[in-house]
Image 1 (cartoon, rainbow, N blue to C red):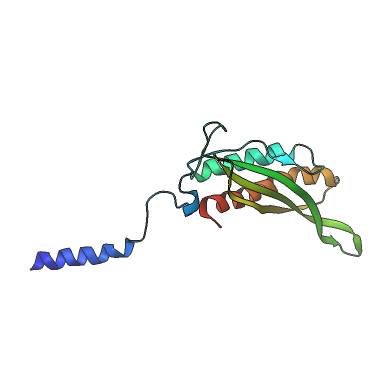
Image 2: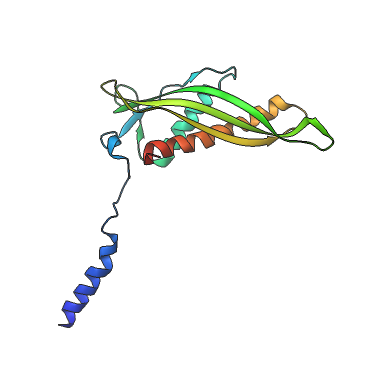
Length: 168
């Protein structure tokens, strides 16, 4: 009788974990996608070489996430195609006494992406994702923006990886 209650107590205490799964938790429409190819994104902006920086950052983030393996296009279950749609800076804070001089900017990067299956049909997208960061102005605004760009692309890559691996 004592062993029956012990077994019942163990069974009831473990029943709270019945809905949990071990491993990745991909959306149902990505269940068959295990490997992704990521060719270099297209660039529709005047910012030079931002597409290479963004593609490498997205690859690193997806590798860190671990939900998908990155491979070549001929071996991939799906291909992630992206287009850099905009790189913009907007003033956030101005100099006291001179509203025309800015001391801090927000830098935003926008990408439109699609996840294309082996059959050529889109699995996800086209969808938009963005990343942003802020930076303070020193003596050269262009240099400061160039130094802040990797932070904005990293923010974008985290959001894109989250949208792909978690579905939101």
